[in-house]
Length: 394
Picture 1 (cartoon, rainbow, N blue to C red):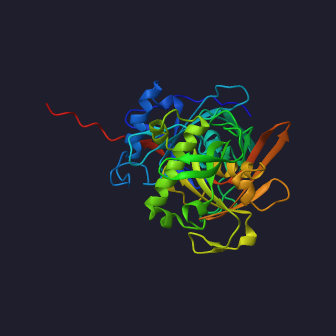
Picture 2: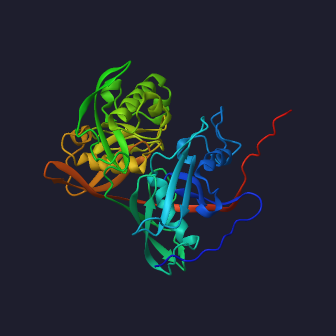
Picture 3: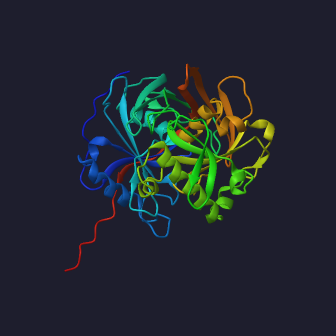
């Protein structure tokens, strides 16, 4: 497999783009060569294309869908590091704010990058299974994507079902190599598996702060007066709970060294992700099905950019699986002991299975790799048009 040459296909009017589903997210994917040369010119363009900021929270005048999982952009270009086939930059476009957050990666959209690279001719692949080595510029980490190819294009049809997606698809195996310290440089950013955090307006809260694939802070739902199986709508109806979780997230950001001030932490809303972890328990899904406690090893509810997540962020899921292998974390305490590397996580859309290889090396923990399966599908390609800037009246 080699990098295939690609011509400059920039045309007049609009910007060439592909709209893809990756896992349980959707977003616009661009060729790096089609975007402004200056990175500082990207944000205004992405906001205009997605329809942000929108005080109505719906992004009807753009490509966004009003929630964080469908307000995403990806940029793909030639590799800048050895051992990679492509570079991939992820941007989380805020719905209500005029801001794009590049602070972390999106595991779901990562599953779309390999098929995009093959279908766009960036990677030459004839048939069988292909491996695309993806350098995520947000975290500096390498991701290997394995998926089937037919006649030079990524296969779409298959029998893999993932929670939150009604139709099955071709499996995409994502392997995150050396995922520890993706956001902060350390798997345990404070050196502790669990500790007490002083949260202004709330008090002392016991948390675990772990950084694998993306930085996360975990709490027990009991400290918020919750059972841990609440649906996203239930959490959205509790602004008091979301406010406490945001305070915890801000303090964790400071403790982990992600932000230097509370204002900076509040502005960088993407990471750390904040999640509530509890032991396996019977729970309903968004589709109305029942998840028996015996079918999962852990129950989780996550917040994404201030909003309760309908499923789980994949990078957060990988971080959860890693944390479950680290003795002393709240995740390890809540998770059912399992054989092997696989963890079954109960969440609002069903059960997510994720694997993590973690070992103890002398006086510290090492996350060697994490992996999971997703599906992806190209929804359309063509040109997208930003909202024109209205000239100021004289």
